[in-house]
Image 1 (cartoon, rainbow, N blue to C red):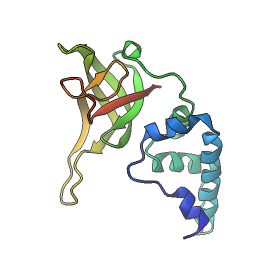
Image 2: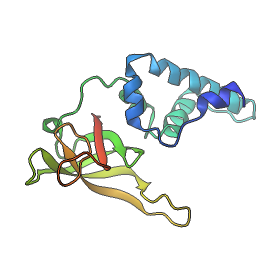
Image 3: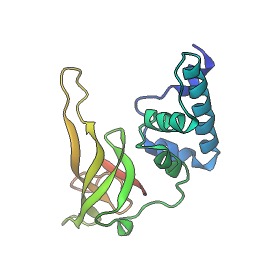
Length: 168
């Protein structure tokens, strides 16, 4: 396997949260270098893509909506708290292992202390089924989160679901 394809490979379980953890280094520089290698690899196959186009393709290959969202995730410094959320605000995060971006439609407190119900509309639907025989796309999601915007179960223990990692 060539060095270029090794650098462009993405593990399926990689999410936007993984990139936020790398934010302490020059991850933006790494992404730009990967975009340059992608553009050169495509050019060797007689496919012309602008530098901006290669940045967008690379960001989407990592699960981000666009280049600006990918860069925002690498620069994430302050954790998002429940008090930061509001109707109409845009966010980036993860849902069942998928990197997602969307708009918050509602946040309500539940009877369980420290647990909130969040409703969002995703920019792009995600497939919540792992079967190869069928898919179930979801674009409107209701989930439970804690005060740190991490996914929790109804009783407040950590579990699968939606996490809000960054407000856009």
